Image (cartoon, rainbow, N blue to C red; front, side):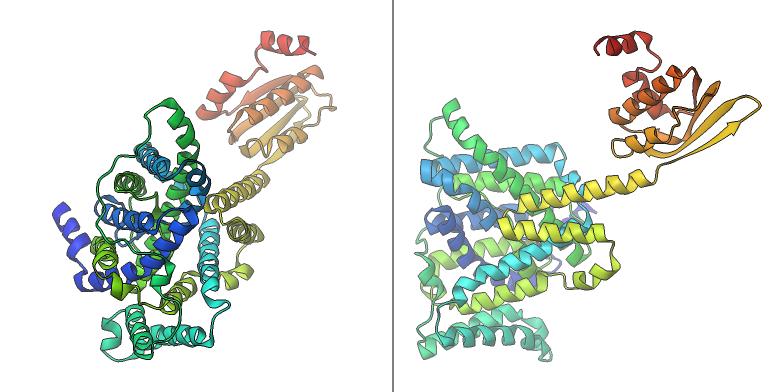
Length: 497
């Protein structure tokens, strides 16, 4: 079964994977160069990183068909490090980033993705689609009319070519777009921006090199503050992208294996003169839309990228940026969840707020980790508020026994603790009070503290207080942190006032 699964991963979609890998490789070139420029390093640092990370994650990653390489989100975090300490410290940071990510994989932190709500994922996807589109705007401003014509022609090819019988479904339309627009540029000798204008392509293969930095605590103090956020952002973007590709392909992936795979890939990148990277939602969508499903497409994307920039640089440098802009606009359109507009009416306001805030924070700050953090935090607060409303208290009075019984129903925790206390009548004079907890659960020390407060105040009024029906989990936390039945602890607290 394992061998069949491996064979399916690698050879189950060979033809489509080869063509998709070629399209992705072409789309990776300008992005890798642009991200190198953002980070303040030579273009070859981003290109070598993209090659190494794509090839490595194809083999050891947890998600077939997902593309990982140098990314803008990671590049933004490297700017200050490169400016103040140089390339060698960036390479050392990349190695440490990889080690942290591998550790996260073994600690099974990838499983934390289950705490990310669907609203956060939708907001993340929509924000990335907007950022991908915005990243193309510099190529469409202060340019001649030829660029607009070429870009619109490229979009026309991308969307209309698949409608051609037989051949339209067999060749990825983004690849056709790149080939046709490049041919037009060469034949007409149009004076428009090309890949070659982005920066000088490397002319040799990457070689193994150990970062030339002293192995001291001082070095660790420099690189650690950069490695931690790089590792976190890289894992967040990779795991979110894996979730999106899961949805697009209706398959599952191993998130903890993905953490380890990204870590191994970054260590490999650092040893080959590359910068840290992670999964790329744009290129992953290009791969999926072009028919790529297996590990072969990711492997070939990396290998073809290196072959093209090193051995076919004269041809690759002639590709018009308008062709790649058209491909990326297609990606942004395909990535955006257009159904989310209709869902605004159907979904509850809290879910809509979470999605919109995730979009706003990511687009405003260009910080994917911060956007996801805000989204998860808001979703958690809304959830806690919702659950607190599900807790209620019923009471009944037995005149014959002069007993008031409070029936607690629901979850008692930090958000519902005040509501729990407010349910008791502390001014009522009764002989006995029974607190029935058969249908209640206490979750934290705040809820235990609220129980202590209620019992102590009721006893001060002269009532006998009895608790019944505590479940085992609630009993454990109350026995450990509660003080209502520990006179010596009550005296300590009273003595401190």
